[in-house]
Amino acid sequence: MAQVEFQEVVKRYGSFEAVKSVSFTVEDGEFVALVGPSGCGKTTTLNLIAGLLDLTGGAIRVGGRQINDLDPKDRDIAMVFQNYALYPNKTVRQNLGFPLRMRKVPKRELEEKVNDAARLLDITHLLDRRPRELSGGQQQRVALGRALVRDPQVFLMDEPLSNLDAKLRVQMRAELKRFHQDLNATVIYVTHDQLEAMTMADKMAVMSGGVLQQYDTPERVFEEPANVFVAGFVGSPAMNLLPARVVENGGAVQAAGEGWELALSPRNAASARRASGDAVILGARHSSLILHEEAAPGCIAAKIYTVEPTGDLTYAHVEVGGKTFVISLDPQRRIRADQPVWIEFDQDRLHLFDAVTEQRLP
Ligand code: ATP
Image (cartoon, rainbow, N blue to C red):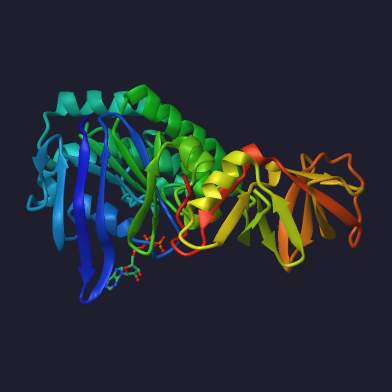
């Protein structure tokens, strides 16, 4: 296995820049999720590593060796696609052995590697079936096995679970994570699903508009999003974001919006003062807000818009200054639409962003 290093990688299609000077390093044995909305440049980035596209600028190194100009077949990288790309007329055994046969691996060794991969992925009993005789999850395991037998330096995966139904996706997510733990493999995994990235990856590379917005552990991306984009993208329901002005009021610092104001804690006041102007964006996760049914000091007055029970939690949609917030509640709470409520902010979990640069305020 090997480290993968991206150094100021640029990809242009004609005059359109799909990947804009992206730099990050995937350490040996790490599972990194490239995540972002449709069109953000994640598949392009993956295809640059695989050699399916040429770089416009920068460099990609695998195990310290620059691979930009290497032929895809010489890169020692295995790719698992979302459509599995299995040969329909070959058995599972033949599908698994195919990459080795192409490389003229001796028969004995080939059989051994195929059997080892089948054992690891628990598909030994399926070896004589053809792809159409397999479920989606089983086909996905065969596709993984075909990458595995090559014993590559790096695994690339492009939305490998997107064709599975929701329940199977959750199951395969755990299996893929286990697969990574058992092999200690370097994996670069493309997904638009932030939850998939959060649950599986050691690090997340969050992209938007061809720009790498943040590269960090899932915990840090969640707890300390680098900017407004990341704050809104990671976490479900999305972080509540509320534009505000910073007002100095006799030594105290307040954040104020349409018809509301909130006294900031000393730490948040210090952050707010670092903004380039007086405009900030407050960010609060649904779980960091407390809903009161009677007026309470330091709270913002609001009104319930609608209530969504999900079984485990109930989500209250609450109107504040022309915006709607989501607050999670214990399912036992009885709250009705149009009810007046008061919102308490947990200031230790409040996020502050500069409204102009949209960057997190330290
Ligand atoms: P998705 O999740 O929808 O696959 P993505 O994040 O993987 O999105 P890319 O496929 O990398 O996005 O595409 C990034 C941008 O580059 C998009 O705006 C896309 O329209 C553009 N693009 C991709 N391939 C080409 C091409 N061959 N020619 C021109 N533009 C392209």
